[in-house]
Length: 348
Ligand code: GTQ
Image (cartoon, rainbow, N blue to C red):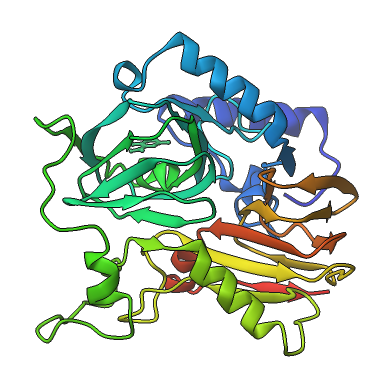
């Protein structure tokens, strides 16, 4: 509403009117239009950084309080400081730190929410997706697309910790959540490890495979070794002033994002490199996989090091500086925004 001086009498009349229409479950648009249709995004979310050193201690403590099986998933949710109680790190995305101790299993289930894992710490765990296991190695990006059966287990002798990213808030917003538990604690092995990568992840696909455009990829692990080699490989060229050396993960059969609701990226910043400020409409979660430096979001800044997690809300200017050669992983709702014609980026 445009600012205007109202007589006390007119103010009373309006207030009285709002109250009367309110009893019929109506409200005047003109009181809220500016907030409903803002000139630019005004995310309620805050930028924040979680230090892995602290996260690790706290998630290991959960390991002494509850078993993975009892918890179903033993996860500490990373809640945006401005969105406490809503189980989200941005308005559209959920993130959490999952722990699985030696000998434990996280039972098989499936749901319409899509999930990604980014392996941070420890060796010997696996994730099984629709009957195929993959060994989880540090930096591996693993997906469990909507409605795929998945379970986790740890066959090694160390605690294993990874970051979960899910589209839980999107599915909740759409009221489209379904879930079920399997009768099997751990899935029966239907295919040997590496099968999906060999069939779908080597620039070839089976003869009769015709993916539809929004289908998630059958490649459910993107090994860090390969990602890293690609990032190093492109580092001979000129870095992008705003992104350094940055690639997006794709469904190799379609070129679309691995899953329709979550996009994921990997980025290398050589020692001493500082990006120019950039903002985009997709609030983004970042993880430092190698190196360290400083992240600046608007007027705030944090130092980051390996396994630290930070979130940059929609339309907040982001600048990164690497003190050492650094590799960052990130994910956002970009494919959703792009499918809807909403995504924007501004290079400052
Ligand atoms: O591993 O299946 O962090 O279902 C939240 C919900 C992880 C999982 C989460 C889940 C999972």
